[in-house]
Length: 227
Image (cartoon, rainbow, N blue to C red; front, side, top):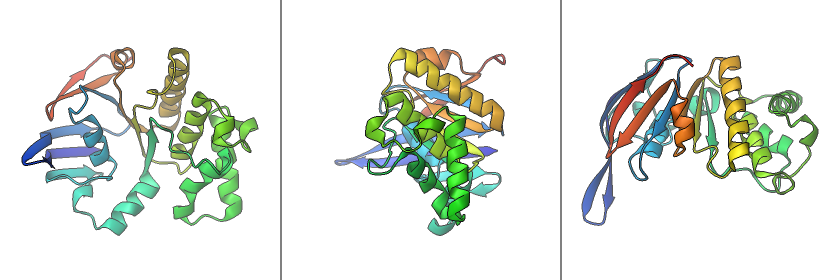
């Protein structure tokens, strides 16, 4: 479970100080699906980076299962990210010279698995996102939707507790958006993940069981009936 208390993140912009997050309190339970929405520059991606241990708050605490990510030494934080948190980004972030299979395997290298185990788990992960027959393809040989499926397989292959997605459908057309959302929601249910997603897309936000709206660093959470 995540527990955020008084999370503030300040940046310098020229001579002024900007609050990307301004005293955010937030609880995200195990297995929750939370969608974060708000205007550009409102603090959405900053909040996601805090949850993923990719950035540290200026003040406040970001606890995951009782451990304050903000206070961890970098080596331990890297270990938590490698073992417990999967990331999916808008731009896919695939390595262009590696095949789909090899891209997925990269997530397992920090876990110290044997090469044979990495290969097997990566193949299974690609199968689970419908790309079992495209394992040897390079990113340039795949459509945008297929590249995002590879990125999702890479995030899930390490069997994380948490999946964080930053605009995962932002580069996709409407039909592919719906496909990817259906896949993500299916994987969320199947694996019992805690799933937090940033989106600009109101169609996605409307279907979220929990919606966090961020404006000027302040957060408001709306609970909906289970869908």
